[in-house]
Image (tube, rainbow, N blue to C red; front, side):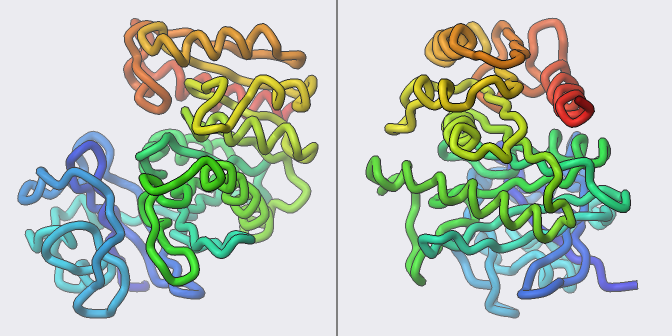
Length: 326
């Protein structure tokens, strides 16, 4: 048995210790599950507010969280402590999960992206799903949906978009999205292309259906990429906009044609709700439309659906399965 290791992710102001397995090629790590429902939470540094890949591990020189203790997840586990604050890790944090890897991807314009690739326990994946997060968020927003899709037989890659989370390096320099101009947001489309290529090659899913799911700015990126890539079978848009940081969707929907599309928005998120209604009017293909009340924006809608908690996650998984079954 290989030594189990730990990756710490800060979600919603709480540091979550996730079991991870042995270091793989090119320094990639193999993460485990956990963290949901309070599992694996460190009770010593719950005031940490953001994911940040800004420190250097004092043991191995690798990446750390924003915590003052300055250890990466692997070295923290060797000591049996939280990488954020040095507190002892709970036993539940050390439960590994199969078929997962934290990976690095190089884009054509020299950004280094970090992602989590989940592969199903089947001989060949049913397809590839790429998950694209909201502005000022990270891939951790997909921690519930990704394993549900994996369990349904799909290879799932969630990435930190450039300038977010652990994707801050370009040409050896650190950049964050707060300093981006319109051209930088447009260039995020290269992140989607790199993710698709990586997932198809590394997950053994070349030639299999590719589905993009995005939230907020990630929704706009998903539609723009799908509109220009006929190999994308379907896209799902959570709280899309008509023009988000210069990423415009109305004309792109025309290019997308009659392929399946999923849309969801909450009425309290007025701008996204109006944009979703407009895009729904323009959709030429088979449309699945979910409307909620008081559920918030993008991935915030998970678990907050009015009267139907869990409906959005279940609906997305069922929709993805339906797309590849046709």
